[in-house]
Length: 223
Image (cartoon, rainbow, N blue to C red; front, side, top):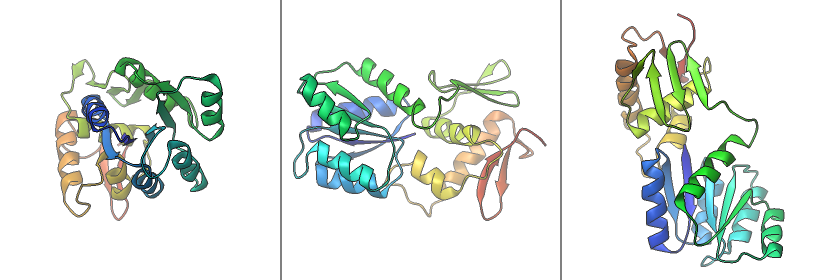
């Protein structure tokens, strides 16, 4: 899953990025509200972490622009202010959740997982396709009784395919949700990761992860 961090404090931003990448998230960054608003409105993100006080544009204005652009991804606001009226005002502006600085990273991750389950429907923590079982929160994958050693990108790619089983997922959608804005959309990196996934899940004959000509890839329950 892909997260955008909009935070002007480089030390906080770097810690968040490294910590979230360790949790298998793909992360983009912006250090001011103007750039952050542009990225959030023009890219596909699963969640935005937004500082309240930013250069160029304040967090509240950024959130307003995100919603006016028709983007409904969850927005988690960070702020040094803890007054009830401040929280109410931000929640009314379109923010989904609010955390006061300083905060614990463990709580932040818990809030993120909660928000990622919220937007349209509650998702199952365990996803199953054939003998493959993916635990969204533990970031673990098993095939029968064997745990698979997947990279962060491989896990995210498999997660997208399994959450959309029987549906063809385009290369563009995969690139937007698994790779960051610096990725080369014309490289063969997706194909290489699909090849590795097939090898690790025992899909030698390409019967589980199937190529859909002109459309992308899909994972199927049937042969």
